[in-house]
Image (spheres, rainbow, N blue to C red):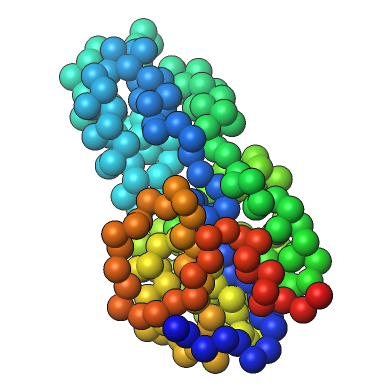
Length: 223
């Protein structure tokens, strides 16, 4: 088990997807936007996977559908249909993206004590759109389109706010990368393993503190 930190965190660097919030819809609603326009489900799913490379955006998915599908384009072409589809995507996003029960209250409380920085992988604009829709408390949002790029974001937190940084993520590989780059004195790594956790079989190369929800992170902060 990693050592407990001897001093309170200077900053909380926390992942967003599946740590603070999650999608309650398994992308069926997203695919339906295209299926309604004659795109086969497997083609829509393939376009989604392609659009995820380097960080998902809905615009990238539309372009991918244009290239990958054999379906006839909507009247006037995909470009003219984009505005309607983007509006439908916004509705799907609003209805599908859900905060975990304790996320809002925890972040509101902790943000009064120390800077909270959301560190996330993905398309910068899309990630900011998702986070802003949920109106959660955070000093900054840092994003990277590099799958291995979170250590660079944590480094920025260290440079700006000092040490130790408390880094919380649901993915073991992200925590391992952080530990590869920073000592326990600089960064405390915490794995958020919820009951609905997606990565139950994921093994890690390093040991990390484990919590089952964000409220358990309060033990790292002074009253």
